[in-house]
Image (cartoon, rainbow, N blue to C red; front, top):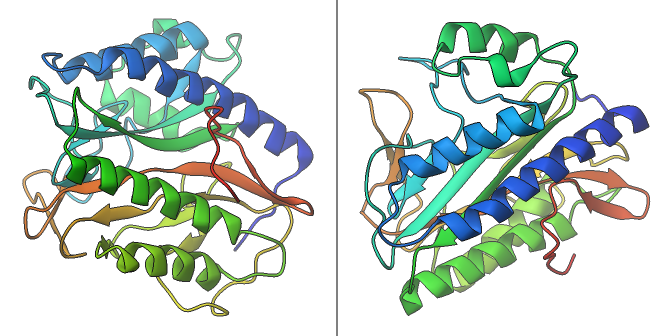
Amino acid sequence: MIIRKSPREIEEMQKAGRILASVHQGLRELIKPGVDMWAIEEYVRKRCKEDNVLPLQIGVDGQIMDYPYATCCSLNDEVAHAFPRHQELQDGDLIKVDMVLGLVDKSDVDVSQLDFSNVAKMKELTKTFRGGLADSCWAYAVGNPTEEVKQLMAVTKECLYKGIAQAVVGNRVGDIGAAIQTYAEEHGYGVVRDLVGHGVGPSMHEEPMVPHYGIAGRGVRLREGMVLTIEPMISTGSWEINTDMKTGWAHKTIDGGLSCQYEHQFVITKEGPVVLTSQGEEGNY
């Protein structure tokens, strides 16, 4: 069932989105050659405690294990859902950082007192959370990126905004996917098909699913009040991916090619889409 959101729900998601955007902005200063990737996870956990938001990825159900971290940190050929870890970032790396934050009142949950390493306890909070949440992934070039990385990042970001541009009342989900797929494939890139965007709020993943490929004019009709994510994963080679079956989480390109991802959460209004996770650098849509 697709639930259109009330003005109050949208306002709460926008508040969460502002916090999430500021965390991504903070990561711009942190992510440099020589930095331990684990510092990204530590920074996000610190910000969650300071801003009293729940890191809602901790405790998400998995086929083999529940997700144990506040962030997904996917490096180079890792497409999505890779674990943050102790690994030094190298000049020229491409890292994608994904997170979902939930707005809570400190009188209900004092996030500063939570033990984020207690995945079972965090899972209880995640599964019962029904407040304003925000979901966004951003790509970061480490140090001096190659032309290959620059081009992939530019095309992927443009794919994001071309998809958002189609998210208007009366269009269909297929219009979003077709716009993204057409642009990516015109540049010789593959569009990951196994992982898609989705409705969001009050839970993390809701209907409708929003593929980043498709046929214009097909699929669910878009209506005012829908809150969605678009999160294209664009690869330099094949669109196919492999999954780490030791954990059931990290996905990599099947051919070792680079992969990039940008994600925004937005609401569909009569006037057009309004991004709820804006970092103040919008594309054209």
